[in-house]
Amino acid sequence: MIRIGLGYDSHRLKEGLTLILGGVTIPHHKGFVAHSDGDALVHAIIDAIMGAAALGNIGKHFPDTDPEYSNADSLVLLSKTMKLLDNAGFYLVNIDSNIIAQQPKLNPHIDAMRAKLAEAMDVPMDHISVKAKTSEEVGPEGREESISTQAIALIESHG
Ligand code: MG
Image (tube, rainbow, N blue to C red; front, side):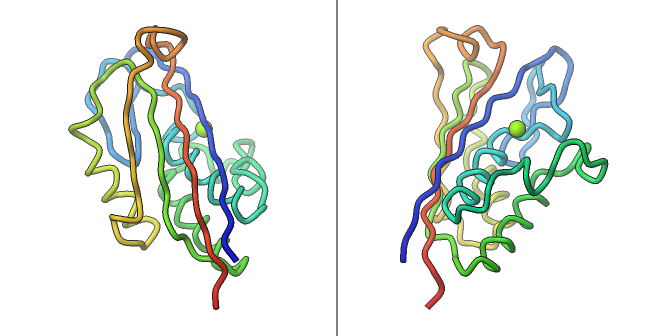
């Protein structure tokens, strides 16, 4: 049995904070306002995986009201999500994802993100696709008020 899941996230940007996407710290004058490390790409991927297995969402398993998850390393939550997926009887086939950001230019960081994600998920790097695009200076992403992310996960049941 194969199944798919969809994930989305959006985080507000603020001057002087750290920008982390796909586990990679990206040099920029703005970063994410968030309870955790604010890694919106990882959050969308977690929701895609949980959605595919109908396990709920990131907030159900890792509530931001729980002090254990304040300043959480999102890659650790991603590793835990893979364990939940395995326990539910599935393995990951592949992930595709988008990052919508006007600035900074993310293409130089894409392969580093894919490597970090693949390591955290314990899958080969070619199972993980990350794409970056601007929103043509339109909307909150285009005004550099936020960065949003989308992910889709394909999973298959064990044996
Ligand atoms: Mg989030």
